[in-house]
Length: 199
Image (cartoon, rainbow, N blue to C red; front, side):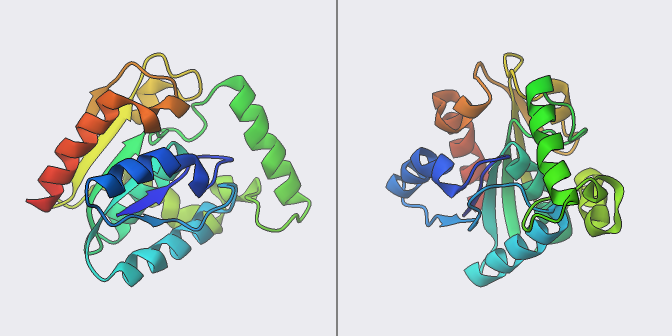
């Protein structure tokens, strides 16, 4: 199993979810991301390498931007992905976010434009570096990939309509955006996904 954090977050943000999964007997690997602010094309290649190192198809769980990366991984390498869970992920429109979050995105991109290493830039929005990532976000998922997209109408960060992936089982929960990775209803849905992926 591979966990991917959201925008501006790192692997430590999913510590509670990771512990819950481990207590249920799952082997959990982290993404190696300290702050999820890098170019999506570069991140996709690194995460693919982590999946390959696992040696068997894995379930990938991503929070927010991490969910978009999980979706792209599943579309790109269905041989490595048994299932995906996308928690509050803006899949249909990456910029369908609150005004405050959009300001943060633009600030990171501006720093990336200035050459600060490790940050995405405005070029990533429609440039060649992320062309595959953008294509994979809307590419059909393999019929053997179990997919779950969790959304909340009370999510104050991501517009819930951007989470409605047509290739996923879309489930509504009552949760804040960041609270999805500690929400009991989400955990019930994850148990169902894990059972389906194992079968």
